[in-house]
Length: 427
Ligand code: LLP
Image 1 (cartoon, rainbow, N blue to C red):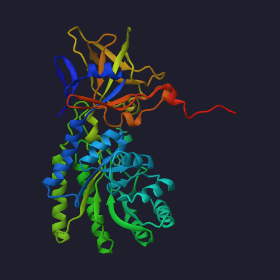
Image 2 (image 1 turned 30 degrees about the vertical axis):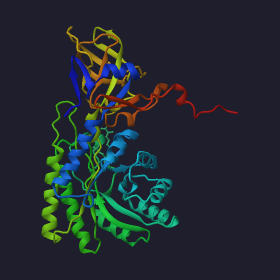
Image 3 (image 1 turned 90 degrees about the horizontal axis):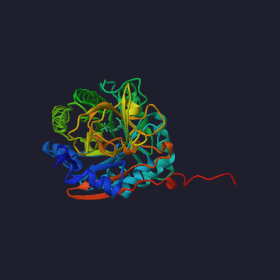
Image 4 (image 1 turned 180 degrees about the vertical axis):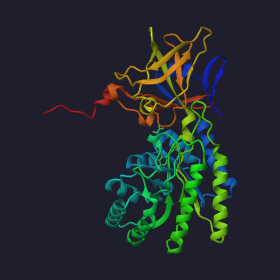
């Protein structure tokens, strides 16, 4: 379902024309649909239910890095979501948004002592540990604050996710996780540490996966490992398969979330039945993009049109600092005109005002536009705002969330003064 549709010739978010949003909040502005967010989360939650799972035997931990706005987190927290975090800062956001720390898992290859202590003080569900030195440090920090840290090992199953090299994480040459061959020895170390409680296993093989075959292959590898550990008396209580299901940016046809989960639960059920007297294991997910990606657009105004011999440029008020994905991954985002014109379309590169040739949002698009028109950069809800920067002393965009006919400002546009408020000159 897309919440962004034309009504009377104007692109709307749910029932609100984007023209009205630009008028009230200016541009560039990220616009999110609450209904789409809820719908996408439900596709995970419903599939868990349909497969006989309740809150004790499944948990969807939304990946905060994909979009960490408090309103987004709050909508999901109210739906029972857990959260996958990668920093103490993200934990504080989850808490501020009303999230339950007992549903928080802490991923990441470089957790600091401070972040570990903060997470322990809030008794989070689990640390996804990625190395032996990290295990030792977590053990030490937990001992110092008189706590026990529940852990899972992020195992690198060495399967090819067949996605962009920058967002593929499950291969041997990636920096992530514990090598499959080293997992057993690493679990033995974990089991020997006094302030560590071995709880589960996890993996995350990459992002924007259109096919679930690599994920199911990774699941097979995890299952094998869980049984090997079991034989050694190291019993795991949860299995976390990570995030990664992709979305439609252009012509991509990702597997439906519900179908993927049905296949995954069928495998898990058959295995538990055959080898564990049907004893359940809790299954966890860490989706980001598939929940929020297509629930958001970046609304921007055409500042100038430059028609040249070789190329035409539409210079817009959003830039690479607002949406980094095209510059960083040559990512393709749809561009839609907010108001449809009947004049002939010309071919444009849509570029921002930043002083870099890499500052483009879309290339070679046929658009019927004039100066002052509004454009919507589509599928920008995930890894848009969270990866934005202040390059060129550009304040970050405003963010709004639409709920039916209502619009809520969920982050004010940054003012230039905000950007240098923490700076000082020499005495
Ligand atoms: N779990 C872990 C451990 C992760 O590293 C990630 C994403 C996720 C879950 C969520 O994955 P998702 O369901 O969103 O695919 N900035 C890039 C994407 C980086 C993904 C990083 N890890 C982009 O804009 O495409």
